[in-house]
Structure formats: structure tokens, C-alpha cells
Image 1 (cartoon, helix red, strand yellow):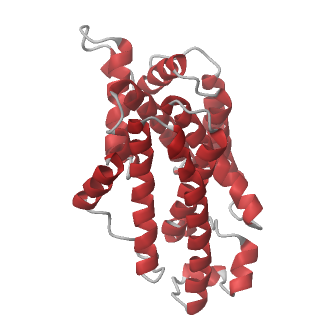
Image 2 (spheres, rainbow, N blue to C red):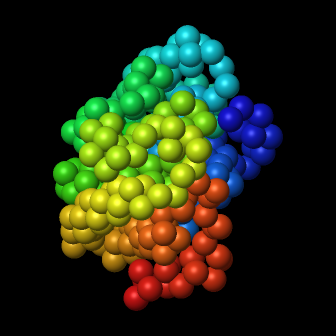
Length: 284
């Protein structure tokens, strides 16, 4: 996210060009997020895109190929930049403008960075309490930041919804995370259901694995139901936005279940027609 796009067109403001860049990133990189925010009015859509681009940057650093020490240095730098005047980089210009317009808590942005740092320090979780705390940092914090843009003072509900979406991500990305050396499924639950890390590495679709994943799915559904109580506190278009990407995640969870929890070779993406139907249903 460089600065060239911010100086080429004198007819457009620095902020306008920065927002165009973060919206481009969102359209290109977001699997589900972009379908929800297209429903929002322009000011909110741009602010949410800035938040997405920031969260994407944190993930890209944490999941990238650099040495761990360099990743940690770059993430710590994000903490510093959040508390400093914006540079000419598109992301920081857009994020600073969004923070000036909406009461986005700085603590939520810092928590997101702390989630990235946690990924560098921890790749196993002893129980669900440990995992839930991680989910609150990497996804719940993003939900809290976004809710400030939507216009509802409901951080707990937003955090719960964020945790729900992260739990679905964890189920979907088991194989990909394992290749990165990470197993997010709680260790005590793996042991309880008789699933070993070797089973995950071998992509073994056993009855024990299916039972373990059915348990994860039930918990994710519970968090999703609780998180969606947020909708009652939002204006119509913000509620439609949240309902859209929550609906897309619910559809992903349903596909995981219908596959018999065979997530090892990846799931085919939702079709454009399916995404449009979910967005239309959210609007209605």
C-alpha cells in the first residue's frame, strides 16, 4: 500500500484516493466481507474498508514468510503507528480519517495487533478459554471497531459475533493452519475425542474427527446466534451488512457440516449467485 496513488490526481482529495485504495484491497482480498459492506452508505463503507485493510495487514505480516523476529518488529511498529500522525501511505490516511469521523476505539485496533503477535508466540491452545481469548483479539476486536462505524454501542455483542466468525474460520482452515505449524482446536478437546495431531497432518477423516468437528460446529452456532442479537441495535443498512457476512459464514458452516467435516482439501467457494441471494435476503 504505497503512496503513488495519492499524488497522481489533483482533482481528488488525499483521503478520497486513500479510501479508493483500501476499497480496492477489500474487493480483492475479502472472501465475505466485501459482500456485506457494499450495502452500506458510502461514508460507512469506506471506513469499514479501512478497518478491513488494517486487519488484513496484520494477518499478512503474521502469516507471511519473514523470520519471526522481523514479523514481530513489523507488528510492534503498527502499535507505534496507531498512536502517531498518519503517514502518506493510503492505509494510514484512510484509517486516520475513519477514526476522526467515527468513535473507533484505539484499544480495539491495538488488540488486533496483539492477536497477530500472539500467533508468533503461541501455536497451540490448551482449552477453549485460551482459544476464546485469542479469538477476541483477532476477530472480536475487529467487530468492536466496526460496530463503532455502524453506530451501535454494543461492544460485547459485536465481540461475540467476531468470535463466532473466527471459530468458523478455524474449522474451515484446519489444513492450512496445520501447514503453518498452528493447531487452534483446543488440546483438551482433541484428547477427549481421541484425535491426534498426527491424524490432522494425515488428513484422517475418522468418526472421531467428525464428532470433534460437530462439537466445534455446535459451539460456533451458539456464538453466532448470540452475536446476531447485535442486529436489533443497528440501522437498517448496517444490520443488512452484518446479516450478509454472517449469512455467508453460516453458509460456510453448513457446507462444512454437509461435507461430513471433510475440510482437509478445502471447500469450493460459494457461488456468486449464492452470495447475491444471501445479500438480498439480508436487505429484505
